[in-house]
Length: 445
Image 1 (cartoon, rainbow, N blue to C red):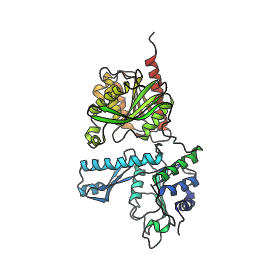
Image 2 (tube, rainbow, N blue to C red; image 1 turned 135 degrees about the vertical axis):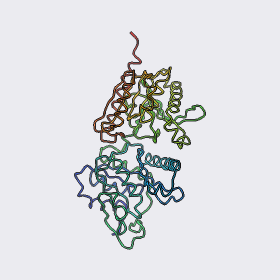
Image 3 (cartoon, rainbow, N blue to C red; image 1 turned 180 degrees about the vertical axis):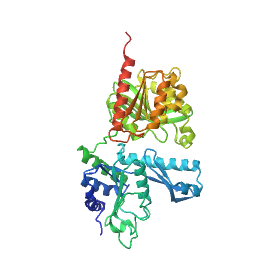
Image 4 (tube, one colour; image 1 turned 90 degrees about the vertical axis):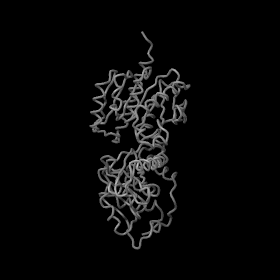
């Protein structure tokens, strides 16, 4: 069988996969060439389309030999045996992961235009590529999907070499290939048109997939709306370093919320951008920024140095208060994971005039010695299935002396990937900030 192009291959593959109709499905394409094929499958089955972005972690002195792979939201899959045999140090691994994660996040942002990633947890996931040669990327994608909670994985391709499942039989639950021809030299030999797929074409496919399900025109549903007012990239001088961020301040904003991300994340986090968009639409300003420079992030000790991060946050807060949209405005903190500890630490400092704090899946235990001094009303949000973090937040409540509340999102795990979970977080945060900002600005009786 010879395919005219990737669209033709996808249509034929969709026919083979019709037996999966009626299940809770997500179709994910491997970039770049797998996404146009996946689009046809998703449209035929009438299910969500997403991209699964993975990066191989190759041994430093032999990059073609994989010792693992990384995916979004901090997922990392390692072959510990290979790591041990190659004698790769933790420092070498951290440097390599940082480099590959930077590229992974860049591609994910470009492909999705900052839409939140579709949750795979508990669902049947069809992983689609335009063909398989060695299978290394497909293996990594399957492993990452499994780590992200996929219940059942179907690896589906138009063409693969004979015996293609032997090396990857443990990574997926089902395997579908329309053709396994002999001889097999390269995937491209089975396509009349196998021209390269561009990043923009991948993004356009995902836009089309989103429009098919929502009925809209393909507008990025997860990106921040651009309300009137200030909306721009900013640079902040903090001591001897310059930090970068994105500041959005709608006209007449009741206050501004600084987002403090956790380890392994950045100001480009789709989750924080989604929450920020909800706050913006409620008339609140937001500042998403990086606490560390790229060089500083290479040292993992900095990522968990809460004193350093809190100090940076205080300096950024002073900068924010001096901005045209920030003078006299209420300031709030939204912290995730380790970022929540930095937010609480900074809010506890003498003279801190923070109107409200929200923690998402936070680690308040890392700021335990400062919790008693926090004066800002604090909302702790935790997933109902995040048992360890629930315990840490309950203990933090006993140390807080300020107005506080623990909100548990039923059925949610640490990353709030489940359908509706992140929306619940955004709604809780919005209401907390709006209510407490309003109380801060009420005139005294």
